Image (cartoon, rainbow, N blue to C red; front, top):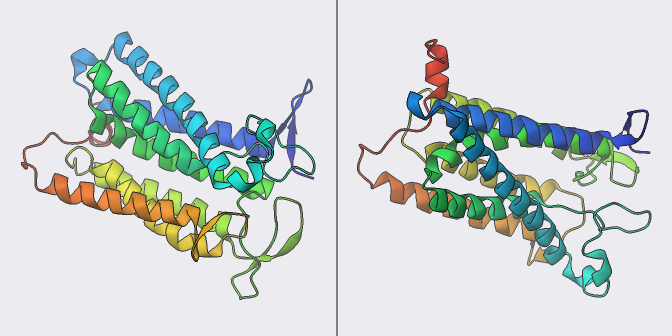
Amino acid sequence: MHPTIDLNWFELSTYSALVGLGILAGLAATYLLWRGGQHKKAKNARSFFAFLDAAWVVLLAGLVGARAYHVLTHWAYYATRPEQIVQWENLPGVPFDGGLAMRGALIAGVVALALYARLRRLGFWRLADAAACGLALGQAIGWLGALTYGANYGAVNQSRFAIELPDLYGLVQPRFPLQHLEIALFVVVLFCLFLLALRNPRRGTLFLTYLLITSAANFALGFGRGDQSAYIGALRVDQVVDLALGVSALVAWLVRSKLPAHMPAASPLISRTVHGEF
């Protein structure tokens, strides 16, 4: 039985509540960082609505991307059950219904953000830097939801580090503490991004740092996952995608490091806050 929150007129799963909270917290953090990096004259209602439009575009693209990624990585199942592709809720006895994948949301969201920023003539890298902190915060909360629900569970493990944990179906066994490590990962990444932002690095540094660290860590942690997945050779599809994202981030980092050193810095919100300017 998965934990729920009783709201009198309906029950909401703790997992859904925490994922929703993670999205809201991530958006709030992203907006504060993005707004903090603007000139004072630009901090008006128009900037808020521009951000709100971008948030809707990215959220919708992320939702479609998350579902598309899940369906494609379980295509052997959905190919014979096409009616379940648009099935968003989990149904008893249906193993893959309602699945959404963060990697698909990230890829689709970044593409949508780049297109939106170009159309609205907004700085993509400044938005991406702010989003990096929001993503780290949101994913830390979202993984807490996965822990309460048993989603994305670790593999059965007999080492001294194993913890008695349930899987998605409620079966409790000693497992690799994947959810705990993921929560710790994103908390640490958020803290590292905070420290990096204090130095006002060039734009793009925060986002590329987020992508590089999380991709490398998730690639390694993927060997301890116990939930079902498609494989490419000895690697989960998620690990292959993590590897591709990590390499892309590294290449982008190296390319941008060759650009002129006078490029604009990332959002200075944190330093402004420390010095009482915001």
